[in-house]
Length: 124
Image (cartoon, rainbow, N blue to C red; front, top):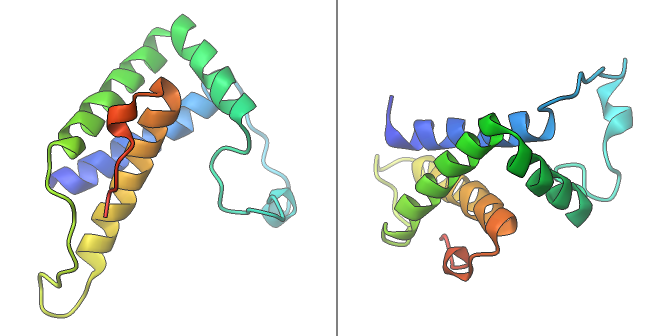
């Protein structure tokens, strides 16, 4: 498994488990009804959600491990060069696009949870 895929899995798992750590989620019959009309693709709706997640992290060993993995991933991203517009296979920009998306998720989540100014930099 390549590093990019591992990073994406770590970020996605952290978000999923952190938000639903102790809750059983019952999905509505029509999932589209539950979408936020203003921003249907947001993972977290408000700063209150981040604050709740921060308080959960202080009390839960699993979430602390998730945070340490997330921060390790963020540190490795910070030390990598900034992404550039390139088409590695000569056909698609998909590899670079996915890398930028992964960096955005990891760095933004790490920044929001720690307020570390070193994580606040361009990912592109």
